[in-house]
Length: 113
Image (cartoon, rainbow, N blue to C red; front, side, top):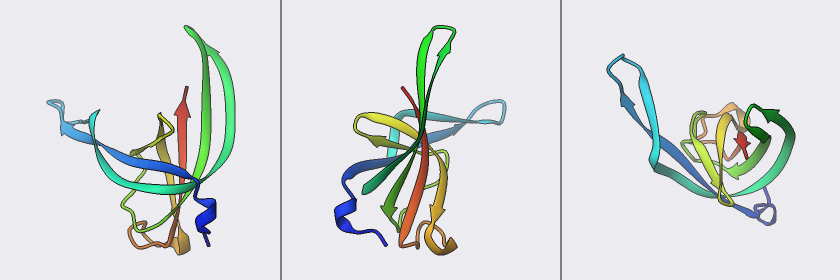
């Protein structure tokens, strides 16, 4: 059960606009995303690592966000949190239900800085 006092961070869940390209594939455009929902969340940082790439240092972070349910969130969407964007890579709904009808949802997200 999520307690209201634990939900201290504001999230915006967004989906990119999908368009079909000539080759038959799908391109996702994030210039004008669709807002799926706005939710308060409890944030649990999971891992963080730094590495050096060809053109400099990068930091990669994986975090879990616990939100109240009834939200059509899917992997491949993203969240906006404190001015940063993180990709949703996993969605775990309570009691194995679909996120649209679950009471609680855990979003596993990955972001780079």
